[in-house]
Image (cartoon, rainbow, N blue to C red):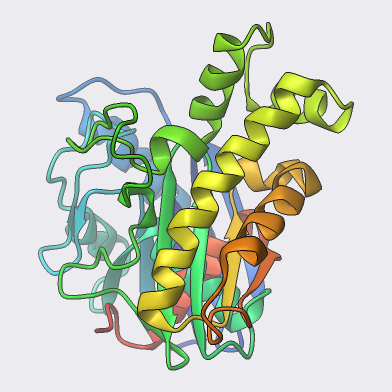
Length: 305
């Protein structure tokens, strides 16, 4: 048996797999677009994933397998129902992965929890005692590391910051609540806000370019999003005594047009002494964060509480 872990990262736009060393080094990595599949066509996606895992795994069995997936998921039943993969509903992902590497322990974790674990282990969160990792993209997800250990909670969903209510009079959220931070600070939400104010661009990348160029509405869209995100961050910081927040995802790629107003908003409202030490930093691992974190969780024996 090798000293490596096989890791997979499953999302609505990409499937990625890698062999990860016990020190977190990415040794061999492959990525493909997630196949488009309708409900009832789950085998199309799973066949693509298992083919990718066979390609990366090679002949030597790994120590363990870590699978990070968009949710909802049940890490104990080994099933996933990703909102952005409609072909999978309560899909037995761990059973399919186990067919690739028979007899090897397989562990399932939420993608945002994995990203947080990866950043704490090998990325921007190294050394943090209490860290919140956030993925800001088409939605907003999060994961916690408490006392230096990834914390996924009894159902595997701890840290789900996107559905903290920051504006009770705001827009309805698909989760059933109103005014969740995801309805304000996700990429599509900021684009929607800007277009309502007269901006004519199409997507989050274009909005970020416009903000960097100083277009007033685009700058304001990021300020509104950052203000909502700061409210959610400070709530979690007060509850969990955080010392660091690490933010990744497509929207975080906008750089200082997001981080500058976010840091101002956090600093301006961090009145409690223990919250004022909070650091807000960009993620360091990019597209490898979920893979590294999935491997980390597998080495720790799966979901931690």
